[in-house]
Image (cartoon, rainbow, N blue to C red; front, side, top):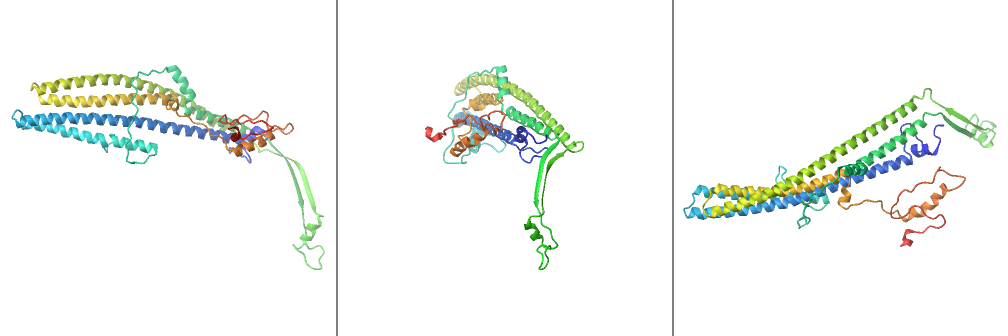
Length: 423
């Protein structure tokens, strides 16, 4: 009948009503969902930290390229100024070289501090990394990335990666907990479709009289006096059967639970599709970033080869100034573009591990429940003995372990050894 059974009471909890279930099984599933949310937040934070780390690395390399470009522009300007003083160059050519130097100086300043329109700089990316790490905005030190980006051609197997992603992505595991919760809610809702049968009983001790306390000379006028005499006791005992006509509330609860389960299944299927598309996009970006890195590297070599040739011809007076300055700008841009492509390749590798659900393993980060306190270990054997009594068994099967953490959850029934004593 309605409300009967250990399973229902573990799902619905005490004083359950239709659609309101707060049993221990639901509470445990809610805890698992919360743990999945926590893992997702940790993963997202580590993703932001990793990407910001590589953006800071690029900011330093871009700054170095801009400083080198400023040095080349200054050398060209000083050369043109000496030639102008000697009458070999005109004043407008010297001004042209001076203009390029100050433009390179502005690029260095922007590469160091960043701009307000979103272009990153060394100081700006360092502040962002400090914000993510929970550090002070300034402590007298400057964060400099020590790791160099990977230049290896990393390949992932698509079928293996898709299988790993559909198994390890925290969004899918979280949705599976939601599906399990809806399945339990259907069990509880179907229980409310049944008739309710209760064993009822009542015992009362009554008092009767014309007045509450009575008065002198009135033998039967005091209600309190008859109450303490005990002559007006009554009791009743019986079975009460309750069922609503049509039970529309129970049927509506079951239908609502079924729709909620169908919704969770649809969300799970859509999440799987989104994960596969996200993994495919990460694979494509990884291949693109590596191909662009190789092209940018070859472009960088060609740009510096051209720059050396133009500077040699310019020193001999065999070429125009604008060709030298153009070669300098192109060399600085090629240097910056190469490191931009290299950082994009390493960020794409992070995105692949993110899509595979292996980012925490890639960053060597693990999460686990901490050891229980000593009081919990001392109390557990005593509480567990209630579930092992032969004639008073609450469970059809032995309760499973709650955790497989550092300390075992099952202890010998005869003697309890404290974890501290175990060393």
